[in-house]
Length: 395
Ligand SMILES: O=C(O)CCC(=O)C(=O)O
Ligand SMILES: [Fe+2]
Image (cartoon, rainbow, N blue to C red):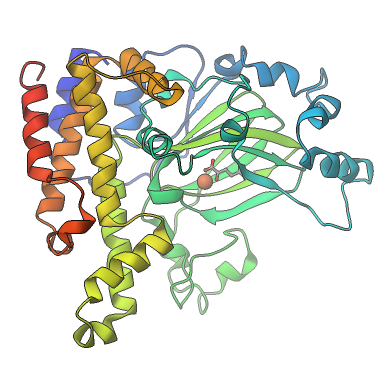
């Protein structure tokens, strides 16, 4: 990241997100060839706008060569040697796109975790400020890097991504149709009980008795993604996705300093909905607030204590990086060091500014103040002080 971009980003940090108005535009930017990281950061990450990268950006990936035949179809003999689901898929196509098992879609397969040496793609630099995978790699519990393999006709219902993260998704072969709705539109796509639509194209949605706010919903942004292209799905944009051909894709969920505020708002909303759900027990239980955190963790995958820990690990890595003392003893820490190196010290400074901003907001949050000291394994005030010291010379 260059210095100008850091200045622009720093000045935006404390401005609350405007409620976003995207309905008027039905176009999505197409990135034909190399753009600088700073440009991607300013044009897409900060404004939280989608874009599509051309197939130039994946042309040197091994999987684009090895997993695909010359006709652009999945290379089953090659894939069969490696992966089991492929037998089902091959039979399905030979059987005229049908199977007694139905139209199965292999989703959320942790290929990267299961085959760490499978050097079949490289995350483009644009998506490399990835705190989600950096944190979950460090605790060795999970990751958010996936392969999807789906026959023509398979699809993913309407949703927004985990913790309101970004996603990027590259078609190794095949084509997808994406229907994207800007943040906030999902409120108009709920039925009278408040349940989010499963299929936004279902005729039932036109029934105003069932979907009372449907008239207010804008048309989705419709994107056809061709083989080799990568789509950037911004934070909190709900989407529904179709495989128009037999399609293999690689996607990551990721988040960073630009959408950290969206994640933090999401967690506060999640906690509020747990609290509403068990409101009636509030007065009868001393440990009601702790219980809310436990329920939130089991429904959402994270609680306030772990979110604070996540910020601590991210901040520590950047403090060490700025002090030139970042360890790179394991594969994971080498990956982190490489990413921080290629994004540069201005990016690390921006990251720390964002951690500070959110940590300060957390310290003012009533539910955060109520956490048991034991659920917080460090002192946020000390971390803020360390960040101030580390960024003093660079800011
Ligand atoms: O490709 C799909 O079917 C779904 C992908 C998706 O939801 C995502 O990348 O966020
Ligand atoms: Fe998604």
